[in-house]
Length: 394
Image 1: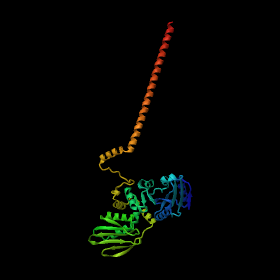
Image 2: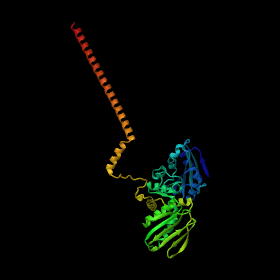
Image 3: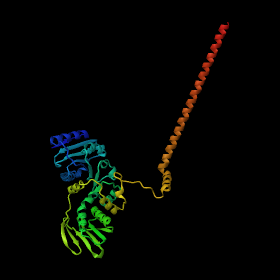
Image 4: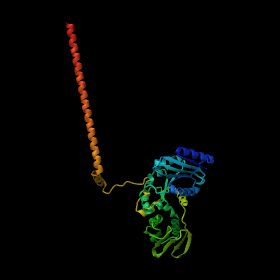
């Protein structure tokens, strides 16, 4: 059963979710985690289907955040369900309008499953700084998809600059069957590798990550070249002595493993659905070090695995140290912004000086008035005493 709440708030959603759980007889939660899905209206159905598939393997509370129009009145509409169309799990689909779209965490936070880890998945263009995004801060695992970007390889570079342990990307998840097959092909022992090549459709981020992973593991240069697709079509590694290992998958379903001196083998290597990818990412909540190594090899960003959790950027001393910082300060001090700030500071100082001078003048006048009054009072008292003496003597 689904309860629809119009123009509601977080407290009402919590009450409705509790009522639905009681009606369904779910006295104990039994939830492994909370999956927060951030998407837009055009991708809601696809995101819901993927979350349903993932939740079948990992009982979880699914919170779908749909950001609607920013230029609208603040409003929150929600669908609350337990065991509804999103599978045998708890789910809340929230559509946010107005300024609430900028503060979705204020609604999501009270709805997190108690004592359970959180995974946030952006089924849209993600923010530039995942670890510092309010919905990213809540999560132990942050999932993006570079393939959804207009320029996937640039998206990978952004992910590398912003990387924090716990980040991952579905472009890396799509490459898991390729990595598993390649790793198994090395089990029998091989001569030292000399070079390699990954063939894929132009701009494929999974191919770039596979090339980076091989390069990080084998220590040799791996080229990424173009093919007609779909996705990755072939991976080849060459060894000393002319030996060669190659995997071809021209149709996106079946692969042929070829190795010098051995018979060819046919193996299933199909392209997976979005729900299967999310289900795989929910299996682990720790930092994915091989992903960080592959991302580092692709983009040239160093030390990704050394970064602290929830800290995407580590400040570095500029070249030249103190001298460079001093020069930078001097350069910035001569700019228009610095001049404007100096002008404001001078005006403020002048105003303060005028106010202080006015206070001193007022205090001086008050003091002079008090002295004059005291003198007049003393003179009056003296005159009164003289008059009294003159009266007694007469």
